[in-house]
Length: 281
Image (cartoon, rainbow, N blue to C red; front, top):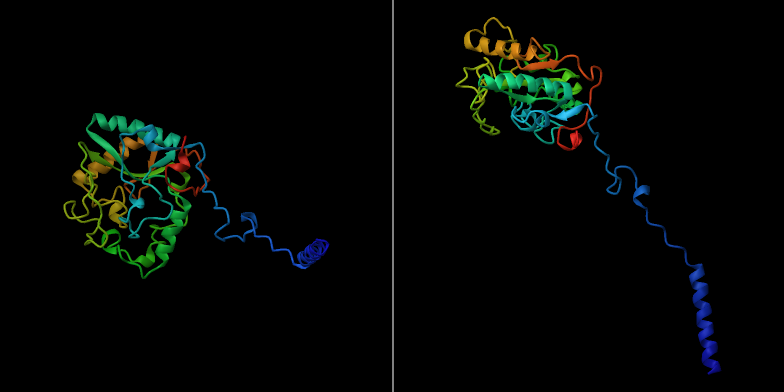
């Protein structure tokens, strides 16, 4: 027995010596220790809209929303950066003014239809990158048939800042009620110039304004003298209705209006377009 106990003690002592001599295992990095950009790094929180912004539907659910930049039917030929969901977001005063205009129009058998509202700066940056890529002319046949793409900056069609990013600017048109849905755009389909007769260009539930939306051509100027008859009357009807509730038209684009005074006249926001940034507003 004494011999067995001495052997056991000797083995235990040897084990303690070996354990003490072994190096301690290296600690595994915690998520906080992970290098930036690694799979374990915490995701960057998306910016939220300030309290002055609201989803248009919370102010007026009757205004038709056809948010083009959340689809591939754009002059880029793809969905625009920052458009997560087809949601119109505006500053509260601009949304309320549209509601007033809509009430007047509904009594006359018309509705507003918005194409674009608040536009994040990242979307504008996407426009700029596209405009500098002169090899990408996939949508020229519809949106800028006669304008050389190299002149888009010089002619004012593309800029590095947009009033849309301040939240009080909206692109919109008029629809005669009852409204028919616009058929989905099929990428790769044959393109027709945006200033072609209404029956030939991409079908849109809008009344005839003489050109389609986002038509890079001087025919899009609100008071272009070549636009006459019903087309001119429709443009003036839209302009008059929105002017009465505080909007100012951009003369170069019959669809572009800014509510004055702007709630954020000097700030260009970059929160994404979607429901989450304005949740609870």
